[in-house]
Image (spheres, rainbow, N blue to C red):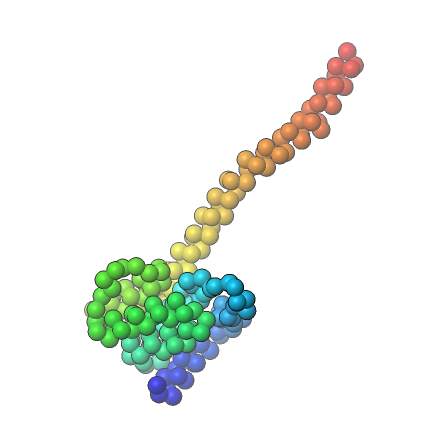
Length: 184
């Protein structure tokens, strides 16, 4: 692996960290390995849009697609071995120009594969397409969170009503009825 490509990966991380407010803290937070031995990390330790941004940044630095995917896979292997395997598999398939036969995998991997195939077929640099795909994935995740929050509001109404309505009746309606009946 050449020093220029390693420097390209490090430069991509620095660019991504400085691109958004608090970016460096976000990378450290997501890339922090788990300290507990009994807890296994989930399949996606590093957010998919961040992986797409990393690949786009290394591609923008001038590395070929297969080399870029191998470099990013090596960079995330310590923190997210599952994601690194997905990237390494995509690098092998990309080098051979073979599409994914199974179509399985996380959403970010499908976006990455589709963006790389689209860029290759159209003959355009894939970095811009990947940045757009990362933004699309971020919007999709935000929409999913917004929908989950709206559903939570609806689900909380029934238990809250079941707890507060009897208390309201006992503390306000019953004393008023007793006072009215006692005054007759």
